[in-house]
Length: 638
Image (cartoon, rainbow, N blue to C red; front, side, top):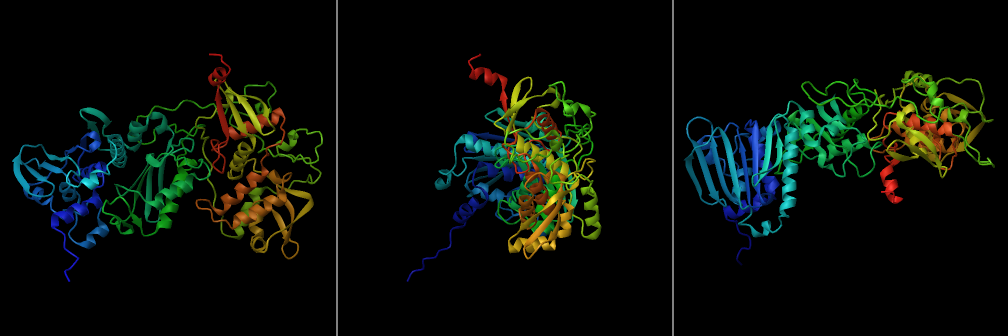
């Protein structure tokens, strides 16, 4: 019987294999641009026609090639980057497989002209990877590659190309990411003589980001500089108030190579998890430096997917680096807006940010309790609310309760030990808990300024209406209060740290067996968070004291969820963060709690002067802006 297996013709095999490296015009641009970067180019120009589907030209001023090297460059697996397979373990160049040029040449009308700057240049042309013609040519130092009619000889592949607009957008995205990974190189992209992208060589990364995204967004980015184990992370990350609908503005590079790696993107998500709404992505530009032995760049022929020897560690490192940056610990020189008062890096020319009004008091009404504080003083304490059960007249929560001095009959007046002292005691007795760093200022984003605000009142016993000169704001009182509380609880240097308050009538809580075992093993740790607890039966516990913010709330529910949070495994959140988040949520005022005018003013001030007021700890929105012009339009007052 005749054999059904046949060896493909070398040209046919090369055209099939080309699909692994070249799948669309953007991949051609990427491979040729990376070759230029490997050749130490300082200027890279890309020209295209019809979104790259008809014509692409990449010109650089790199080292160029000799005639002999130019001939070999279009042969499969011909490379100057490695000599043996083991060299891949230490490769630092962007290319090394020797597949890009022959793959491109096999599916297009291809021309390469190059010169080392000494003597005549060389031109190599091939039509679909067939006959190769070599001739002398005049060319300055560097290389120019022309790719015409991509996939003209592979109709099935050409049929899957997208519209010129879509292919153009992908090329722009590719050049943008490569330009961020290599800010000191000049990039220029044109289409039929029209300039699409022009990026002069930048002094530093922040200048490159300003070129691409504008000064406003560049100002809202914080420098990242973090080292842990084998990994060093540097770059810039946006504050949580600046987000996009996709990851297109999240650029990651490893040893100078623009990459996509799940562990890196998960690290970014972990860092922003409690501050950014789901489906929103802050711009970041990060460079990861690591020993090449710790990263595999040969996972895919495009060399864009990489794999680390310790995926978990690199994810944690990215998350820690970003948290330090956006939380304030990575850049101490910032004003009340969280914006740096000095240039982000030497040589940067970004203009200074406007002065913040975050420290100013509320404008109206006259008798505002917050006016008693000095401009930079933190209000007395995070407000706590009292439950309205049994309040027949539906009255508001007392002002004393809002400021943390509860008069509820369930609590004793004697002063209990400070929660900060409890923390110190437990740290001496056991391993220290992780801490969230205190920010130097307030990350405000597009939120209103306190000095311009006037609290109008409460809507539906759940929302606070605030007015400023150009717009009205509707604030969710629960999530705003939750954010302010969490900020207070996670700042160990806050002089107004909530105290531990004894309960007049201890509460007995019964837990499921697994939770009971967890609680029994963690009694000392629970005391760090203000829960003075002792066993009271097989699966029951008696709570005799809690953190003052919880004293008038659902103590039993908060305790149950705190124990549950101790067992949690939510990625990107430490054990302490989960527990403190639970305490803040249960301590905050609820929808339905009616507040006095002074209480609303205090809550708004505490929220707006917290470190991350843009979103609640769960990533939900806190407020909604309604422009005065929109109100007038709705009421036909044009």
